[in-house]
Image (cartoon, rainbow, N blue to C red; front, side, top):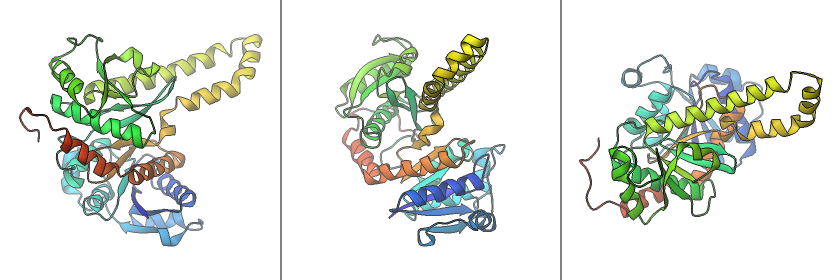
Length: 342
């Protein structure tokens, strides 16, 4: 059984959406055991009358909830009995193989590294975000966890992202690109210029060089490597352009009878395309390099997105990605490194 803990209290539509999504995942997969972490009375109220295998679902009570308006580091220290901290401790102590939460992003990122802890040798744990492109799914790493890093961490991100893309996303020999302001080797700031030769020399990845942001939607690479500031800008721009484009399509197809007729004919194709480019369809962003898997679901996730995030964990566990990441990091230690990161 794959033991997956779910933060029942995190997110805009908690606890109902989280619990309904968990029940759907439980009904679909027979080899998972779910642990709902949160206020027991609230969880039981949502579970009441629902059909599920009670032998594969249990509740771990946690009285407190960390909200998005709290300072993450302070909240983690003060709220030891929060659903988020309790779930991370379960991961650290081996009581769960994975943890899913739609709660505070900052609190998840900090508690993942501080409470759950990193795999030996991993300097920073990045968010690996699955993104839509016109040629299928790709992976962007880091999507928002680590802003100030050293070049060695970009190499580790590339190694972890390659393993996830190959084994969880089933991309054969994934191409790794370094997100930069130009394709030339000498372009970019000090971080990417120093990281480039290190990535080029790393035998554990299929490095193809620099990739510009405009080429990301065309899947110029399968794994896009960057630090979190650039990564989050790329993600937010992709989201914004996608939403703006679909709004404009809707506007121009409602202008007159001819456009409305054309829209009616194209409706099923447009719906399919919109679904393909909807990032929420991919569940959540895995946080790699931890003692177990943490999946950060979007804060506004409904039950289908929570279900997908839970099922995401199955592939990670079945492909033994925690140990694969540990072995890869140990095998590709650079001969000379910058000052050790905290």
